[in-house]
Image 1: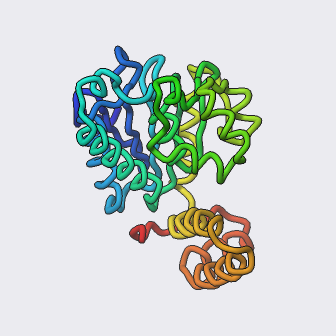
Image 2: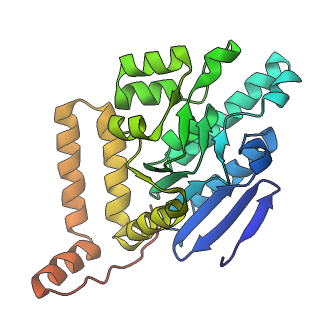
Image 3: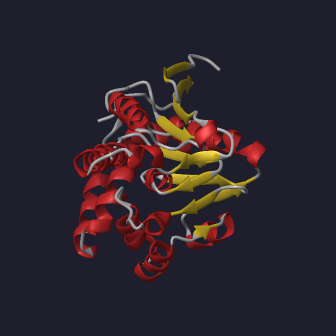
Length: 267
């Protein structure tokens, strides 16, 4: 793959056109997060904030594991202060991923438990293979999730379902995840990479500012009352109407030709 580089023993990054792929490569541990892996992922996410040539991002794993939670072996040797510091660092990385201006796609290839499920929920769209598995099993260790999974699930997919899922720590299979709206599409394992890259490429080829504003307005609108959200959506629409891309899109539609959009820096 073009421009592939290993930025950490368990993290591979490569660019495919305007799409950046971040691949967790720790197959022997099913992609489990170590402290150093979370830190490396955080550095890559931070770099994306100002990566003007990157228009979409794909996060995926290797083999049977997307990210099968945290490395429990590290938990066993940690005191409370170290444990809480790890949780705080992880949350900062997850929040930074959620806040990226670029659209993000999680391609869940296998086990997405604990922090793996939580980081997938920080992406804009989740695709998964038919052998993917989701869950927040922390209660089975006498713990609770700390990476934002419960509040994100409850706000987007319902409090009662989230309570049942988190309090039992059970596994969610692709069919249920699709029915609940957690994942957008379920594909066969050998089709996942292609499907994720195709979606990300489509997003990367659309007007960058419109995609960025759409993502931001949906995120912000969910937290607003309806009247404020409707008003702010119309304000954003008016501002986009004056952009060169909007003019090009309208003219191309009327002239029955493919639009040629500019590639201004992401704001």
